[in-house]
Length: 394
Image (cartoon, rainbow, N blue to C red; front, side):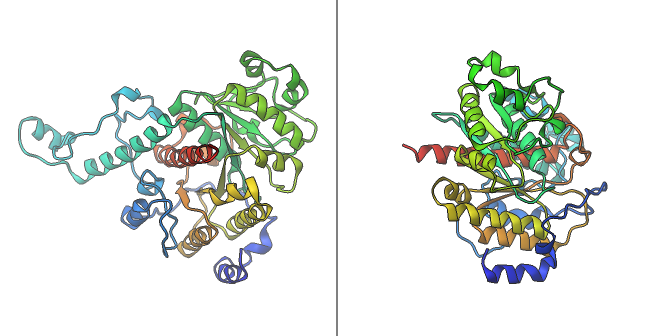
């Protein structure tokens, strides 16, 4: 982060840079107001690689920016995230109403157009189907991996890893593993479903004996999303970079996608090992100065290292979560501007979700529809970046 950027940021963030070690507790009330859809139109229309002077981050057409946080989904949604079969995905005729009184009149043969609510519901459905299609149809010639990190604690790394992996697994039909790569036991085992007897510590111990998918499965916590979590089940030895690489090598033999939930110490051996076996970096942020400043510092450190770390920084994707605390629009705009200047080309907005705020086990089906939409959009950006990353190897 440049000196000039730090100076401008300090005008908005106040003492954020001095509070990098302080983690506030999540508030329990929902966000008071959501950003109107019309304010996001320009953001949704931008391609990821289009240069712009706007403080908003460019995002692909399926970005969650195109879906407002307050949008309700139709009760008969055919999204696979809501239990609908992929074969049933269709888009209604935009010129004819199908819902409510208007729909009844249209079925009688009258030329009744859909109302504003139905038009918006169709738009939301269209955006979601586009994102799901991108995720479902993406293919690679090897196993791929996603590293979730922000050095600032309390930014939602673990929920992001669990939900992102869950969405990928739900849409693609499984073959997604979530791995804890923090030095010491983190919160992944606590936030994931289930209470397995064996986990990461035991897997590291037994890694040389794991030769089959059945054996590896014994160290996982299967999720209702079809993702498999490999986390600590208790105390374990401090994780090393060599252990991370060894475990990832075995996981990649049996899973198509690996999502890594990391810790807060970016200079640790475990984090460096995770960086060496990652294809895409996802950075969770909050609308707070310390959150974005440490994210930018991470990007600077990775770029300074060159090679693989620099490539991760240059293709990083940001996911902005909301924990329920009152938010200042000036801070929100400044977060987006600073991330854009730091080279982040895709920023996805996730609305407040009471299920995430509970800090208990996360179940994909218990998330609000808008939350799942937002993560589906983020997943589409992730798989697009993964495809680009793997294609450059040939």
